[in-house]
Length: 115
Image 1 (cartoon, helix red, strand yellow):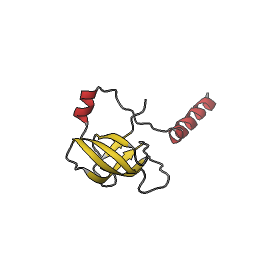
Image 2 (image 1 turned 30 degrees about the horizontal axis):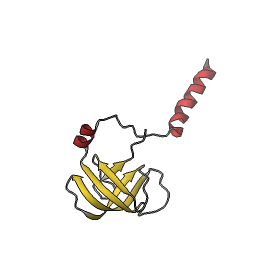
Image 3 (image 1 turned 90 degrees about the vertical axis):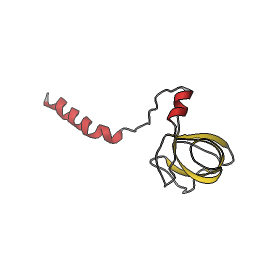
Image 4 (image 1 turned 135 degrees about the vertical axis):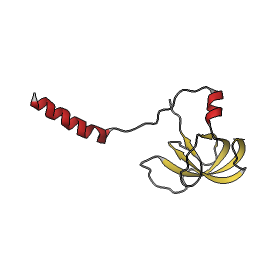
């Protein structure tokens, strides 16, 4: 019995150190997505990783050209935004939304939504 208790104790101590967290997004329809977003932009990626290097946390500073502002107070033109888990490529266009957050002093945090 004590051997099982010891094993359970070791698993409890080591378990959290080996678990990776994945952001969970609730399923939402288009009207809800639009209503909850703070900013919605159509952008063209200029630089998909301004700071360069590997990311343990997935946070990336990107440089974009804002082509259209669908929602929010942003202006058309070049700016820097923050993403987490959003792979991007220079020259491609993206619809980006932020539900709030201020990473790298951008006032914008786009999260990748993956199935």
